[in-house]
Length: 315
Image (tube, rainbow, N blue to C red; front, side):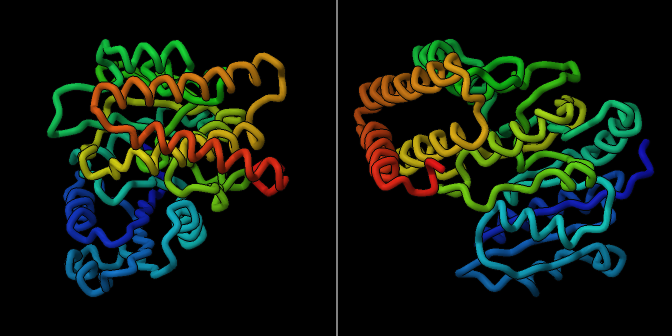
């Protein structure tokens, strides 16, 4: 097992109930972290004292509590600046770790330390679902695959700039491009090259795609099934309008920021935009709810207005 020190960084906002479960799962690890850095962007909750009460006299010295404005990527960057370890593990506040999560992370870095590691992602399970939605054979997933949207695959980025996602049923360590920012361990040296983008037009949408793409151009990212955590997907914001609009806006932003300027990438990008419209129309027919369609076209209208004005999204 690696002797590298390890800090856990958790951005949070107004979700103490979920955060407390996450912290308890960390304190129940077979191998404890050297630091637990909680970057609190809460607006409606005063959590500092309640958070401190989660720790006992043997673990309180591992806590670093920081109060700041809410912005997930900025909170992650603040956590990086306040950390002192060689390995930095980023967690969403509504995750619950298997008790051997840290053990297997350190074991991985000990075995692969000479492999130019950029980031390590671990298996994510939903305790309230026996199925991986991306693994189901459905019309929606077929549309996503044809149009190079999010779909099950080898964890590599497609020509459209959108990644495929490793099947959670996979039992082998894999070399990948894509990583989830809220379930990743990243060596400190990577942050000499990159930080999380605090200027994404829409927050908490495709921020993982952006960071993973940049890191994977220089370093090798990995996925391991040995370390795993639980993430209840029903906690995630299911506002289809907002998510669809944010996807379109950030997809265009990242095209100009990251995607190669080759003709084939441009064609693939616009092909994926067409696919997004078709996918949302299919979902609207299935659910009898047009919010995703409205959100998609609202995002396209936003992009068009910014293009006319030549604002930052198209720099």
